[in-house]
Image 1 (cartoon, helix red, strand yellow):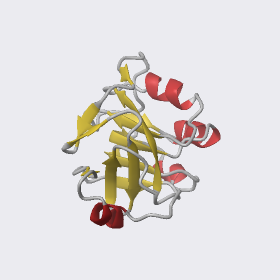
Image 2: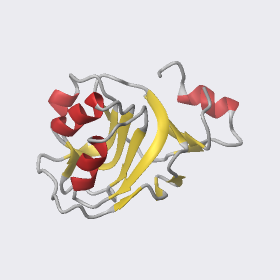
Image 3: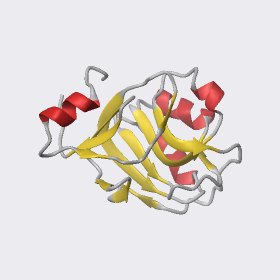
Image 4: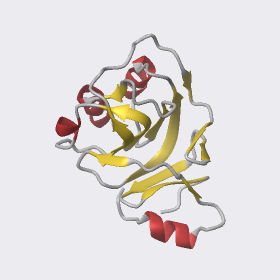
Length: 160
């Protein structure tokens, strides 16, 4: 769903909206996306990212807390294609991604802090669907995330 602007949602819901202070870069053809949150906390390892994106997305946004690491890419074009094929609304990565030239041709919205050509480890280390924090806010599973060209915001329930 893209019939929203994060700025307008912030103005209308100042009492409940949390604004992520991370300066993300946008990738993919979808410049705006929203949905209920699913979370992962990993460090330079994307095995859990892959296994999560292989499952049904049901319009959710996958929030990956990669600890701001730019050492290895947690998402590339193959995982972006999995997200599209399995119905994920978008991905927010607090770390690096790769294959961005290809991702920019795909019908997906991805926010990430940077890029790295080196692929991630695959040891399945990390935590799934637990609250995780970065950018000054806590991302909780089932809260709603809204992302557009102005930034990323989170609310405890669906706003639009």
